[in-house]
Image (cartoon, rainbow, N blue to C red):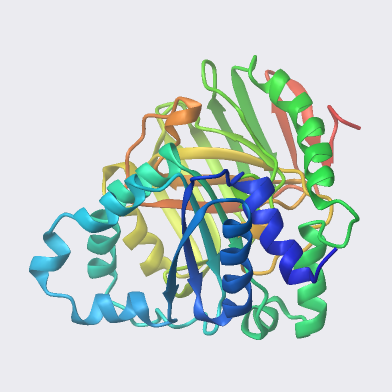
Length: 363
């Protein structure tokens, strides 16, 4: 069966991005996950593919923000775009060593860098087989309020790595989620209700996606891109969000005709304002997603996990997904999580869908 690290690498390369003979696979791995980097290279080679390993040290982006010339930030990212165009698959392994490594970074320069890399990012999302994962580290465990061992068990349990056949478990979850997708694809209006939240948006004509571990590991959600001018009302996100090296807490947004017209945060107001000012598309929704993973029960300051919590809904400001029919363009895609497990509900065309953390259409 191999070690847990080997099983992890096999899940990412075999199940998630389905490496085939002749595939070129870009592996972007943080240096704190070197053991997984080697396991990934070996797994790609064993599948007949060719790995291209890119190691990233913790301060890499911060150094670019601090030292890159204005000419560089204004130029086209031709190498990054060409590189991803040559790849059939992409694996991103984030391994946190210091969550505050971007604290104090010039937000306007960071926004310029994100715009510079947006074309390569769009190609990766829409034209390659890709997956993003978070490797468990002591720093991430500390932020989650867990011991390192407990956090590692939490992460691997959320990926079903302790099961005899993790891929089979993901396929089972995908089959359950497909029942939701089949019904949601006929939906028109989705309404979120809860403390500080009463938001309506429309999804008619959009395609719902079944996120069954192929692109996020762990995963467990169904999502789509709402009609860009449809969001009306208010929504409150009580799950903290870590973005650009800072934490934003208790965000409330008010929408009119799809656009954010009022935004407040108990903590991180300046960062919230900066994100919304990135470009015009940053004030519109690019995604609505509904979490379904039964093994993720508590927020950990990691959106990849938190947005999958069963009984939560997340909305993303900014770039939408072409594959779901979305048309909103932005340099950002920022997921914010609305916890509806206590006193909240989701209705679809007036029919109860989610209530107090229970997916009624499945239960």
